[in-house]
Amino acid sequence: MKKAILLVIDSFGIGAMDDCEEFNASDCRANTYKHIRETVDFLSIPTLYKLGLGTLVDGQEAPLNAYGSSALAHHGADTYLGHQEIVGSCPKRSNKKLMKDIHGLLATALRDAGYQVDYPWKDRPVLVVNDACVVGDNLESAVGNIINLTADFKKMPFPELKEVGKIVRAHVDTSRVIAFGGPHTSLQHILSTVHEKNPGQWGVDAPKANVYGKGYNVFHMGYGVNIDGQFPMIAARNGLKVYRVGKTADVLHGEGPAYPIVDTDEVLRVLEETYLQESGEAAFLVNVQETDLAGHSQDAQWYAKLLNTTDLWLAKFLPKMKDEDIIIIMADHGNDPTIGHSNHTREYVPILVAGQKVKTATIGRRNSMADVGATLSEFFNLPQTEEGESFYSDIL
Image (cartoon, rainbow, N blue to C red):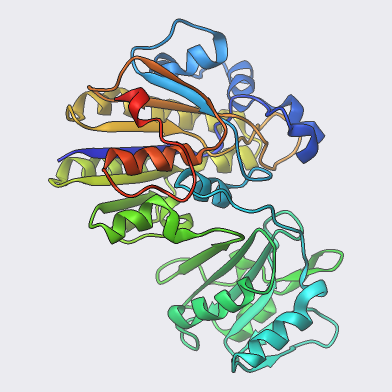
């Protein structure tokens, strides 16, 4: 009963992509791994280095396992879109929109669908749906990238909120629409956190809205993303058990066990525990999120500590893997903490593949991270993902 692990070290880029200037000219200096190594004197990741990181970055002798790298096929450098790409999609290029540009269109669409839509303030582009859900700009992302729906689950249960979110998604071409909420807040409290962060950008301050914690649920809807063509949904339709551990529980759609954990030690503990306990065929989709948080915090020291933790865990875990199993270690974009800003950086990402039966091979530089999802589908003899070219025959 073979198993596959996908371990995404969030934001662990290995150098600016060739088209970086089109995205952000300052990113052309980015190299998350090298700059952390140059900045921090205690970085120690010999396992990752020997698995192919040293070959990719420093031209060291090729490892005994399979290795390579990938460009980002989606425009920009986004965790959500990156993960959609990894599991088999190539998200469409989105456009930046603020609620001030589209609130009238959304209000009409929602009313046409039978919902009550109100404006709490005449001078703010913020909607309230069925006296339970606030629709506004996302204040935690780049301006114009995301529209948020924030709900009080006592008034609008999560399944209903998702249906409202789908209507919003169908009428806006921003990179994401996010529907989320919790049972321990109120519409009045959510509205009390609404403010203008940048000129014309009005939305809910999500951390202050009391939606996080027990009972919190979130539904991400990307632009131009067909979740039914992705590996987790293909697996679900074909009876393969898929575990989502860490941020993958939030950003990847699927069925099966989900563990939305942030703490790195806990993410790795749950991965190891579930892997060792699972007796059937299964896939494990895992995200180490704190590295990305360290990048956003521009904290190279914290980032290095997290890399050390992950590398040490890998050194102890890899010998426990069974002969027929594989692990794919990669990133989803960059987040260079030394670059001078706190945003993601458009970088190539490593792809390191290990397992007792994995060949000594290079998979080269892939044009899309969707090749990973395609490879996972072929590994389990499942139908192909919507996008991506499998490198299964190169590694096994």
